[in-house]
Image (cartoon, rainbow, N blue to C red; front, side, top):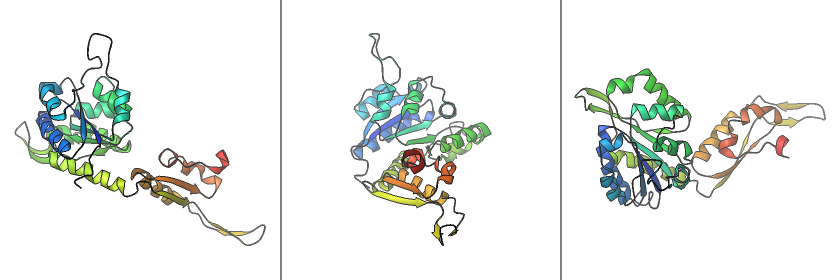
Length: 262
């Protein structure tokens, strides 16, 4: 997988956690793999690691505030979201995870996340009780439902000197997750796949037919998986009365219902 991250544009979001020091190792590992890294850091994150360190390692100015100078210029989060091939938030605190899950766009990192068109990877880092709390788990489940990829924390000694699950995954393992994702994507690159879904009807005469009760959900699930792996595809359903089941597949597959689009 030595070349899989070459020329990839990675937004690295850093939040206010003691694990922010690992971001330096993470940037170095990504750059060595050939990726271009743009750091976006929260104000609290700058209390744990300096922008000078991060900009030196990434070879890009670090973005933290909406307005970089007092001359009317500002950092455009929309452009960042369009530039990225992936967004990685590591470390991700309970606060940032909660804001992501609920769309609380009060800093540059969250607005960039909300504008990002690329896949998002989240590496939580917090004390074991915070990670285990139902509100944190609910927020993580909500992020998963949005299609975000959660890189589970590991167990070990934490900043509180307690031992449990909450340590951010090690940088090399996080890089491996990204490599695996892009490797899977490349398997279907430039491929066009037609997936048929729904019941089949075999005509007996002008009035009668033999059919089945297929919902088409399996076909739609296959189409979603193919879409996530980067193909250009078409999904065809057999009959108009399956429109309700098709809605969920439309945003991912680009499928056009013949009854609506001719």
